[in-house]
Length: 247
Image (cartoon, rainbow, N blue to C red; front, side):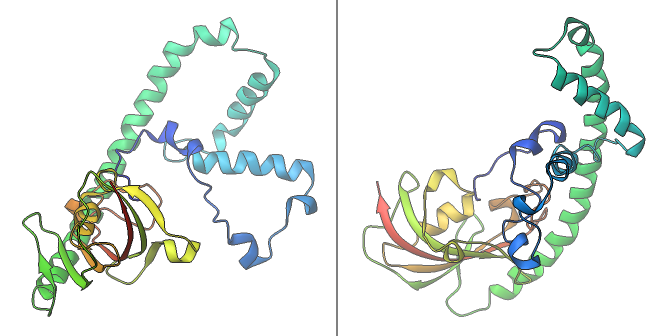
């Protein structure tokens, strides 16, 4: 969840990502199971999810393009391997899709900048208020934190891997992740997570507890995962329990 990575292009990223429908959806809504749906309905779901997960809409494709897209899928499923005729069209396709990707990324960048401006202003007010709270400390990097229990020595370094229970929320209380909800702590290297989270866990030892207040520049900045609950410029708040340090 906290690995910081640059967003890839909309056209290539989505099919490798998680489903747009949460795993709990079926349980909460009583949605149909696979055994209750026909083969045709299930295959239609494949096409439906592909639209959202491939970024087709963001790339400017509409219902008017559906027949042509379906024809391409039909031919691809019929061919054992890419045909010479289709391969010959690849340079033209790359130019065509490249333009759409540039337009989509420009729109995303503009939307992210607008969202970040609003969220950063809200965060500035949040941190101004936080400075006056008892027990809250800050580091030169801009991280704010409150040690609830110091834990034992030694404390971890950024070169260590740790076992941690945590809950992550936004300023408004929105919960975006929780190892507690999953019923098991998470293990990860401190140099492989967002900077504020990694630094914050070096403030306590095993058995310690800390609350981290991570400004956007030490979190996901203006490039959080597309479609997720964390938006550009968001401040992250983590309640962490450090269970184990593995050098």
